[in-house]
Amino acid sequence: MSNSFKPLNVVNQPQQPQPPEPQTNHKKWAFWLFIAYLVLNWAIVFVSARIPEGVEDPLSESSLLNYLMVISRVVFGVGLIFAILSYRNREPHDYQYRISMWGYIIGFILLVVAMVAY
Image 1 (tube, rainbow, N blue to C red):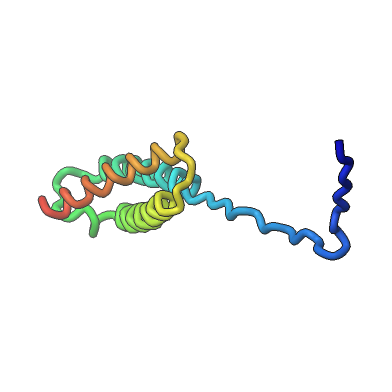
Image 2: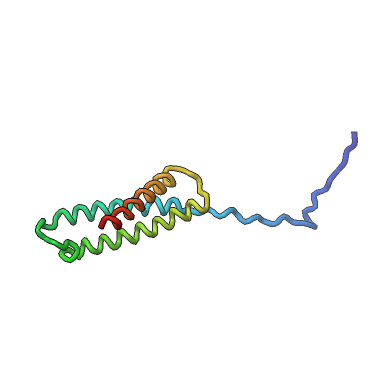
């Protein structure tokens, strides 16, 4: 049995601290922006329901409806960017990731269908 002693070479070669892996939370932002998008769409439904039926152009009738639609589109666009970044960074797949990804996929398809149909 040999008793070999290997000294630690701490003095000559100190360990360099390793930077932590970047923790991105794009899926969290995508999820919360998707929830905000849904809330804004419900607000658009309720505001448009209060406009009388005889009005031909509801956007010119209600400035609140116009503002809500612009804010809703901006929130959807920013949330879609965060969802794409979340997919690109291969973040863990939990409920936030799944809900935001499926929500933005369905929302994007509905947006394209509405633009083509209009």
